[in-house]
Image (tube, rainbow, N blue to C red; front, side):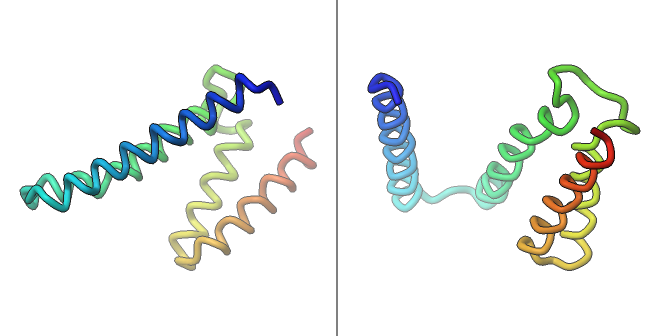
Length: 107
């Protein structure tokens, strides 16, 4: 690996750690309004959605038909399993298995 890339990764880790430590230190000293606190609870979920949806809905860089999009089918099935069994590990295993089967069947 290029030393430049290693330095970038290390710097990103330091910045991420510093912002988290700074925020948690500040959050302990400042009393947040209950509504703001509730809003902040949804930030991780919204970031996860922002990272996942483009890859699921447009895996080739453009929107695909929902009928032929195996990523969408795998995500829907995984979500249904997660809602039904409420066990993330089970949903992950089912999601990986569904993706393997769909890739084998489709192409």
